Length: 274
View 1 (cartoon, rainbow, N blue to C red):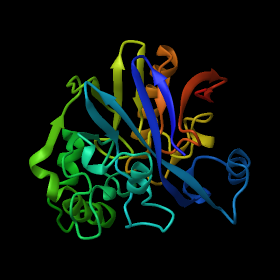
View 2 (view 1 turned 60 degrees about the vertical axis):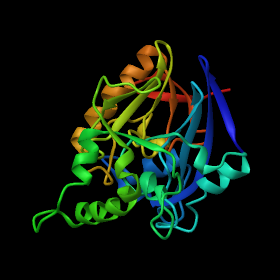
View 3 (view 1 turned 90 degrees about the vertical axis):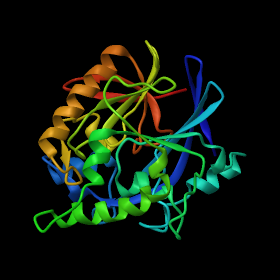
View 4 (view 1 turned 120 degrees about the vertical axis):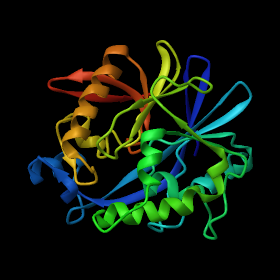
């Protein structure tokens, strides 16, 4: 079921791409028992986290945040296009796709199994630093994980290459402004959307395990290419969000995926939007 929340004059709708099977073993810097307790237990370490996408309309244009995993990762993912259609939104109606970072569960869903664009009329908004890193050539010194993701991203981006807008901090399109928050990936981006206090942030994978990293923001995950840099970005951005009382739309935040932060001890608590 589609859920929505209001921020200023924007009605933001949340859509699920499904759930991602992961492991508590990917948490770095926290005792296993504590991690288990915070997430409410696991199945021998395994647990599922949500993959959320968000959509809103601005000046007659339909804007979507990230594109899901497609059919490339797990059978529990790739649900976004069907969920959009179930809500009466044809993928061809999407005008812009805001990309927080070009990882498989955020970008592989840009194309179908044949490599054709699922969103044939959409322009891609992505931070230049993120795009340039993942579209660069690899060599023998490139780590396998990076090399494989780059190869996949050539497939993801191929039908969109004439419709990619490489953005930098301070640029703006229809109220969408990128703020570089690197570490999880080299150009990982938190997007500020809206104006002033009547704005929300789409924070991508700033937080991956929401039950752990919101209350304990020092905790890293092995998914981060640079865990120390990711930690610094997380601390900086969570502080900003809490100080400015901004709404949050989180890619992997537990249902409904959007809400507000409040300070709690050395970390934060997340209050879902009503």
